[in-house]
Length: 318
Image (tube, rainbow, N blue to C red; front, top):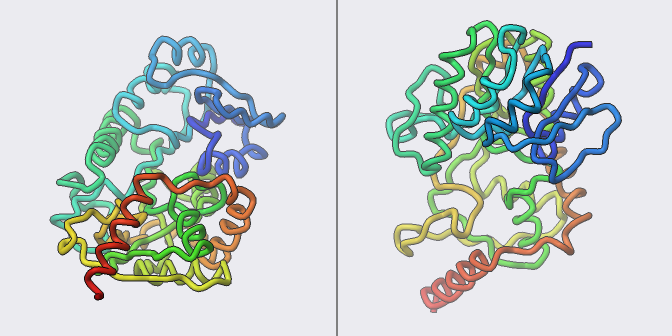
C-alpha cells in the first residue's frame, strides 16, 4: 500500500480528506496534535510546520509516495515541508490553494486557471501568501507530480468557519440577516466532494496541473440564505443594505466579501463531475449544526455590528 502524508487532517476539510483516503493508502497525518483523530487506520505525527527543526526530525526518516497539503498557507510552509521530505521518491503532491488567488480587479467572472493572479485582493495577506506558495511549489516540483486545486467557499459538516452555521443560528433565533445590496454570486464546493477529487488526483483520474474546483452554479447571496432557510424549515428575516451608504464592510455582518466569486470549472469537469446537490449538503451541515448549536456563540463584535445596523436601519425606516 502506497504511503500518504496529509498535512493537517484534524479539522473540517482535513477530516473529510482522511476519511476518503485512509482505506486506499497507508495514511499519515501531521499537525500540532491539538485534536487527535484516534483512528487505528491513521498514523499521527506531531510537529509545528513553522519549525524546520521539528519537521525535519519527524519526517527525515520517512518515505512518502504522496502528499496532500491542506494546511499550507504560505511559501515558508512549503519550503519547510519540501526541505523535510525525500522529494525525489514522491509520486505526487496535491496542494490545496484557493479561489482568493485571482486578480479580481482585472478579471471578469468566471475566473480561469491561466488568468492573472494577485492584485489588491480583499483577502489581503491570505491571498498573496497562497499565490507565493503556488509559485514556489511550481518552481521546485516537477509539473507531472504537482496538482494544485483552487476551491471557492467550502461548506459542510464540522465547518468551524462561521458561514452556514451562522445563518442557521440567525434564522433559528429570528435575527435579521443583513445582505449587501450588491447581492453578489458566490460559488461553493461541498467538503466531501473536494476530498473525493483529491483522491481522484492521487489515483491519476485527474492529471497533474492546476484546477479550479466547485459547483457548476454559483447562487446569489440571498439565494444561498434561502437554501439555508429551506433546510431549517424556518423563515429567514432578510434585509438588504448598501455597504457604501453605511460605510461598512460586508464581512463585518455577513460571511462573505461583496464581490462575485465565480470560477470556471470546465477544466476539471473533463475528468471529474462529482457534485453533491447543495440542498443535500446543507441538510447534512444543518444536522451537524443541531448537535452543537447550544454551544455555538456568535462573536461579540458581530453582535455589536448587527445591533448597530438594527438601529441605523430602523432610524432610516422611520
